[in-house]
Image (cartoon, rainbow, N blue to C red; front, side, top):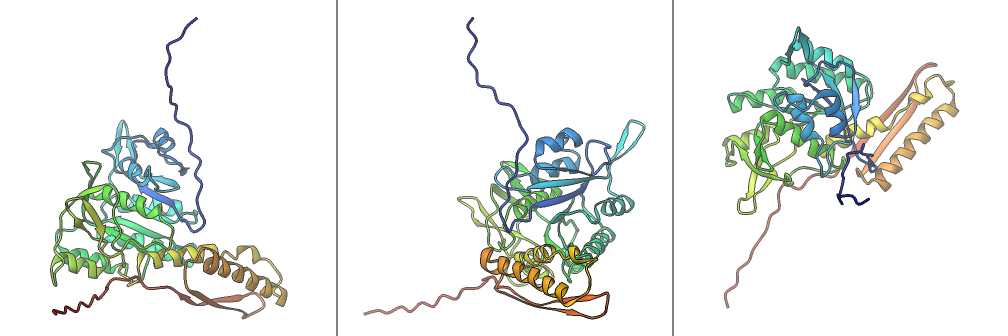
Length: 351
């Protein structure tokens, strides 16, 4: 018997293949269209929506769509849900208690970027900073990308100061229009998180184009003492139009409040996570153990310098300080700077 010819498409799970030097695992803390509390990791949007829903009015769901970019976003996302349920009512507001609880639940998890799908108060920002500092102490440093919404530029500069000692990959205080849809500030920060997660760790966003962005709100001025210049100086990741005809928008400067570019912050954290020495805990503290540790670090050094070309040089030292303790000193991590100024000299000759 004859059948009607048709083409049938069915979604299947996506297998993510990541390249060396990528750090695209995002921990997403936010409210979802579900009261599921179990921590789960997903490697595509379809899987995540099956568990946590797809209601764009709930910021965790809306952020998922931006972090999982079709043209190269996060490799996987760990979702920490702060939604609670009272009767039939879902409570999706981010509170200090919910933020602390969610961050506690992901402490020790393996991920690269932390994203909070909510506009945080100063107290919330400081809670995130404390979490980042604790992660660094545990040799699992990560960075965060956050939405920033204050009623004055001066207040945004004050917020940026919280991250003066590091831990930040981006503060976004503008709304991006992507594919003709104006995103909220939270969604815009999630979009930027997706863009960064899809980059190799040694790529800067300074003067890099924001893919598919066709407008931004607000647009800042960048002359001396104008809002844009002040925000860039504070380490906020501000976007501007570079070609209005072709709708090209770029991040002006991805230098963070620490004074280091995004790529340096990411590479530094990536390197520390990669030099994992837990396997030597429990070994006898002998010269053979010290030699093995040095060998492990040297192997990583050659990987970072010669294969991945993530930085210019690393110097280190390993020493026994007691019968139970070994100190490892990463004395110098040498990075190339990011070009932010080019002088062009022109000589005109009339003959």
